[in-house]
Image 1: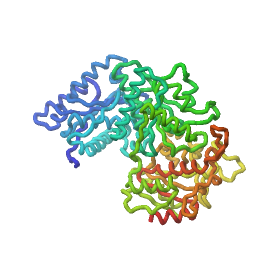
Image 2: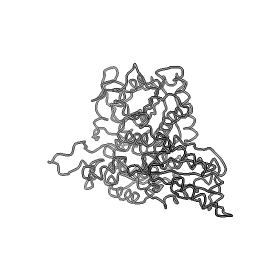
Image 3: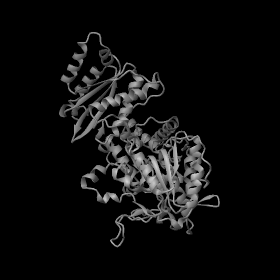
Image 4: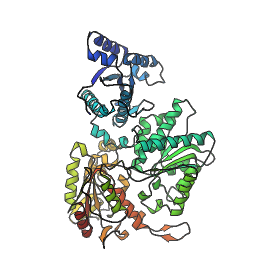
Length: 584
């Protein structure tokens, strides 16, 4: 059900005089629906001000917006409180009303505004402690339409502070935000994690492992982010001793996203560095003085053998020893290198440890791919069972296409990316072409490390970054690879896209993926990913290769990135023919 009743959005100067003028102008109207809605109905409001050219905001809801705003002004004399910023900055206040607003809906609007505004590039800080997303209520079926109209009206006032909804939803910060309304499955697991953490800390336990397993797209990152922030917010609300918590992830792109979230929610300001890489955490903390809780996102990226700055043998073991409780999000099918390879006995040992402590949970619902169950089953059959089955006609609106040439694939992806609704569409490929973090030597004919297929070629990820100006590089600092504008002319890899979404994923299956005798074949001899195809020394000292399995994982990561569609080009002719037949 949709509503045609328009919301009311008023912008006023955020000071006592501005509030007085706002109230008087409404009271002068003898019989006015606008007066009733803004002065007698529940409303939502947004305090905002500029700080070094970026915005800071506080979002709230109230049954009496005038009285509530006066309370904020009274608190502004305390320099330690956010309200003091209203006195020293040129602040403005947006007051939002709708005749269908009730307490539950205003709480939901408040929460979604927090979610959106934390994802705005020009917003440096949200001063709210946390949101309060609601369950079912009347008329919750109108919420989406009403919010969309509110956002459009806010955009008419300030496009910098209120960018398009598509721009927000495509941002990496939005997708990892702790302010999302969780699914019933996520909410249930979150409550159990918080209870287990509370019990362990109250009884002085150590070595507690909470193990959450879920495949790509089941919502591990949002669950992790939400639980991490909830523990901080809950301790602050109850005025408990500050907890020592850290978020760890062994992924350059994702660590940047979490750091932005921590800054925008004020965690870094209040608690110092709460987001870091596992090796930094291990080197900085001791077994004798453990932190309270370590959260590990993408725990399948942890190392199970030493390398460079990490001299241990198992990062998860070292983290567990340095935290009273360790919460890990894990997907065995996303292990991509021998350094991350979990031998079955080690993996079983940690699963059993968590199960023995009643701390093992599974996320099962696919949330990323907007498709029918038949599409998910087809992807599973390809990437797990090495079969290419006939794709059912029922695809739930999900767009799967196979192309005869890489140029056709590129053109289709660029056509999607040119549309504001699908601009986060990119080319990604298996690691089957040479790449180095150092630029190519001068004796090479090409200036970039490239993906090359006959006459067609495109630079690998991060290659075009060398051509950007200082200003362009600075603008890209807070953006993930896929969000940066120049990357439409690059080809991404698992190292840049793992853990992130695309609107449409244009996947190039290189020479390492073949089709022979009715089966998909993964050929390590065609891969340039030395970390996947090199020998791995096992616990018993023997050496073994896991290239086929790790390339299979790589393909699964690539083929599960697209939210709205998957476009494929296969270099192997037999594979390409089989795929073309399958999706006809």
